[in-house]
Image (cartoon, rainbow over the protein chains, first blue to last red):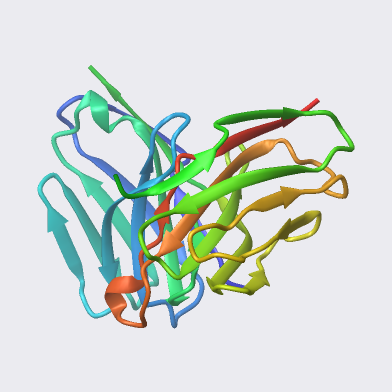
Length: 111
Length: 116
């Protein structure tokens, strides 16, 4: 069935460094790929998304890249700050009503 | 102030009791969802509803029930048949329409249910 694998499960970086989180999806018909940030005890918040007709999208310090051939997409955070520390989830969808989530990456930005 | 509200934030129940979690939205969204989140795991879909008076089972519907009598409300009941109900429950909604811009789901703050 549909599956999204996310790596790494934990990531620790020094403040100012870059962080990269990668996801691989199984359904080649997937066409929508959002990324969510979840802070402790709160609901996930959408931070960026990309569609299958685009290879890269950037929003300030955050960027997402998509490789449809390899069926993987990545989240890139540059100039990390302590407030970037959270759990990040990727997701994939081919039907507008259903998202398949990765297992999450706990990012720790050390001051 | 628009958004998705879930209440209560924390909920404690004794084993064998049914419990209902509230989810309300004033965003005029048609579709609503319930997810379960366990430590170290992603979000798993319990139920979803694309329109009033209609809902579908997700991947882990056993032991749960829902209703969708109003567009704004999508309550989730965790029944005594759910074998391991302790978890963080998240409600989400999606804007109406079939355009690509309506794929995004927006989440509420969640309810942490602990069954003693």
